[in-house]
Image 1 (cartoon, rainbow, N blue to C red):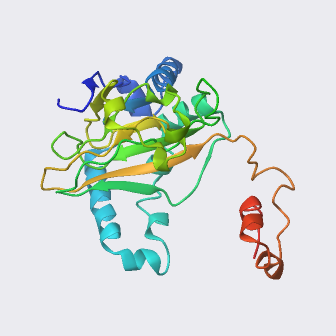
Image 2 (image 1 turned 30 degrees about the vertical axis):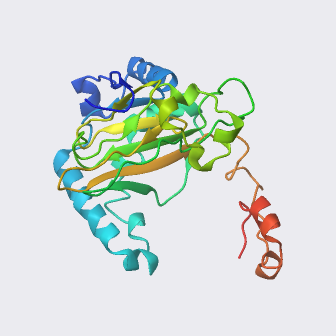
Length: 272
């Protein structure tokens, strides 16, 4: 397998046939998956969703992405079936690891996203999707943002399987890097650390710390490579379900006269 950095094994969580049949990890598997997430920055559970259903979802995804006008006008198709299937938005394997890593009161936003690489796409820059929570500290804190990825086709080197640097979620960036868009990492620095291309079957589930360095690789196949991306957050101070919090609705005439800075501060407040 050819990558920019040195190669290492993909952190795959091996689960039993009973766990697959019951759609539930054992406590031992949850512990092992959480440990891989903590140490490597990601964990892969291979082939847990039916291939025939994933193939249908892949076709539906391409239909949505090919019709931008429909996405911008009227109801968002990503908020309908098959995209709202509980196997995606409430995947039992991912949820157990997410909650073990970030607590029971994680939250997310809908609609979720999709990462696509089309034939002929070039290599992407190396970057993080999320920086350190307190970047000025000389150490990394526990994970607070996680993305769950579901490949809708087999991910191979040929079709541009994502390159990932395991353990990079624990690396502290200097000020110049942490203040750059997407916390971009230079090629020379990344080459000093091990990496792999995330080869995996369609219908696998990936739970990844969003601080991991990664990039899309060139798609040299003749097919489009789609991967769903659902982002989850640790609760912290955002308490949308707490009694009385954000419940008072700001009148439209007041909201529209607030400065953009004030609207940003009160962005979770209900308003007309």
